[in-house]
Length: 248
Image (tube, rainbow, N blue to C red; front, side, top):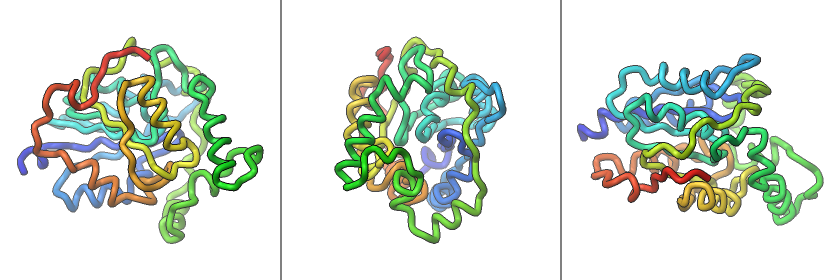
């Protein structure tokens, strides 16, 4: 119980997102007796990954033990905070896993995301040339009442263009226990695509949860259950938990 009480979950949104992205997750962590902090990332013109890392560290404050949870593009900034915080675990959620020097703009072509999404669209019975559609790719598994709540929180807006032009500055992955979680029904980053990227870039297996790209809204209970599952258990050496320094 003591181990659970001292853990702080620092919740990092995806591209253009803000702290409201975690509005269903935080109460569930609180019900479990755990502290959480949802971060709003800088999105001004010229913002960089370093600015995001600064915001994460500032939000965490004097936390004794941290789990960083990074949604989607948050995976580009969360690793930059690992040497500045007492990170017990880094959790990547439907994540854009970067390699050294890669920009978020390059990531799409380097990983083959468009081809994976197109193939999944075809499998789902959709015109594969129709392109991205938020309702189909993001909102398809979100209950109507939750979608209404999400929309009433305001449009987070598009991420600053500069964030897609900043190369991931680390020479390798931080040496902290890392977990990759992928939504089984993610239509934007299809599950098999995420499995391949996690294996190729981190040498890790992506754990499957029900839900799509925004499972923070569609499956908050399942997500929180997974986040707290191993609390209080011995962590073991970082390598056993999936940590690696291998540069993609």
